[in-house]
Length: 352
Image (cartoon, rainbow, N blue to C red; front, side):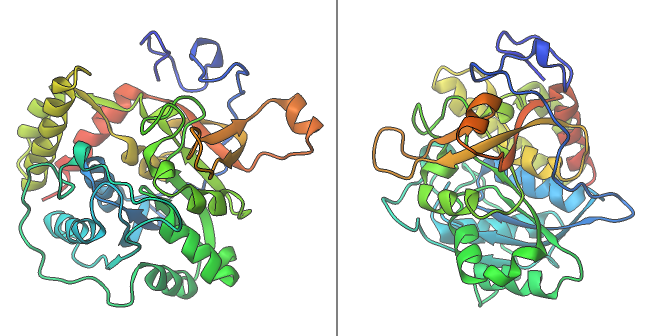
């Protein structure tokens, strides 16, 4: 992990981490399940692919600790139809045509439609054009597919929403009896500190704060992998040479996607680097010690004011006791950044 001055700090060393809040929450034992090679964790990814989503899906396909049951799409980084097609084509590229795909919500439960095409390109994957998949999406749609998989699974299933939370809120509201079949929700979204879509809000929450509010109030076990930790999951141009040495087409595509991101970031004066936000949420479910977390009580501002989409996290023991509140989620705060980069190379070394 890195503190705010960029110095390396081990996961769990609170004294050396630049915390995003005045109260320095103590790192705690994770509550999220973690798969193993012998007992892979059943997982559904809900996604808006998406440059970093593409790398996150690759992680779920490769890691032996995860059993990817499906990828569902939601509008966010691009139009939902682009996101669905991207999911199909990425899984085809990765040799995972057995993983079903279903299309979900076009836009939020309430409020304006938000897109991040200025970041990800109009189609979601920069300038990359992937070979067409021989498959089409499941005709029943994202929420129905998730419900069917949850209902049919002999063990609870983890959800990794790495886009806006519209489909997850619809699942919670439409199928409340399936709540016990959800082992954990490990989302990429939110921030205890600063946002990115606005000073207050991270994009995935800003795109549908009403849905996020429903999820955080659901009582389900949640881990919030937000900007506080993902902004330390950085890749830079040195990764391109490592990927280009790998033989598979997937590695070449990853290098192309990352180069688009680096070029865009450099043009914006932000340096030739990219935070691989979404992959952190997926890898947290595969690796027990990559991310350090703390327990927070998190609520969402779903108003139309300047703090719209803000995830307001409180870990201060005095305030929680005073207000009779209990923590409702883990919040990711630290990550082993060097290890993260090595893990990404390892993933693409194993793909066709």
